[in-house]
Image (cartoon, rainbow, N blue to C red; front, side, top):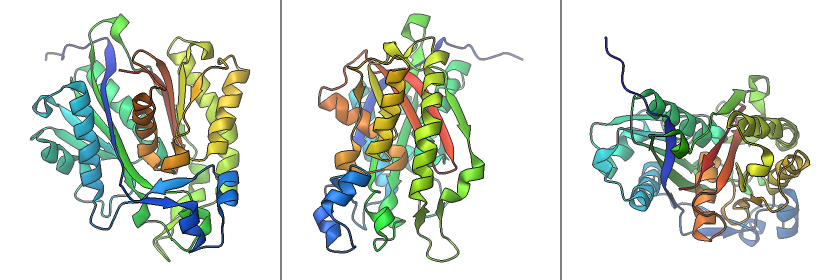
Length: 326
């Protein structure tokens, strides 16, 4: 039996994202539910969100984001070995999104599978892709976080309709042939299944998304910063080495609380903190790669920056890793 040759690790080669054109503002929601702009901004920090139309599928969003990442990397989709789509909002569990996306990109015959860790999905999928590359199972893996949450939101429920949105973000991962090229650190991940009921689909009644907001807020603001710090330690770094913090864009208050705790443990005051939720809303598994792509386009993230990614959400599942911006 012959083992597959391995490499030192993985690195990000390209980034991409896609959002619907339709913007739903807080003023728009005021016309439907009992809420207002000041209340929404004070609770979750969102000013507007993007919502896809009925004819836009999750797979089409994922394909567009994936194509953008491949173009950014200057990489031919025929050279892909695998496509992973992190999502929790496919309309049906079969067929999966990844095989359809791979074919849509022109990557025929590659390994393709979906991964459902909800809002932690992109971090989970990045860890899986990195391990595949390091172990020699693949050399180039396209990781996509894509969600069409609008299909699962009760638009008459003000506790959820103000938060969730649609979009997709992607990253192409490839091999790092030497230790000095490694750009994806070890993952710190886990789950809290005893809190599973705090975010769930009410399939027995409305088949819509339900969230116990205060319970999730308390959990995220206490449980996630230790995960972030552990990811930094596993990468052999200190909090002071982190240039940019990109947590899942669940709630601006949660994002700010995580950043504050990291600074108490040595993170720099000039550490850039993602706030894409203000204009994109909560897009679950798409939020981290989409925020990263938007920040890079805006010049807030530069090639070579050390990034700390931390996903957390339904399951409850969480994961974090340090990566280097391509």
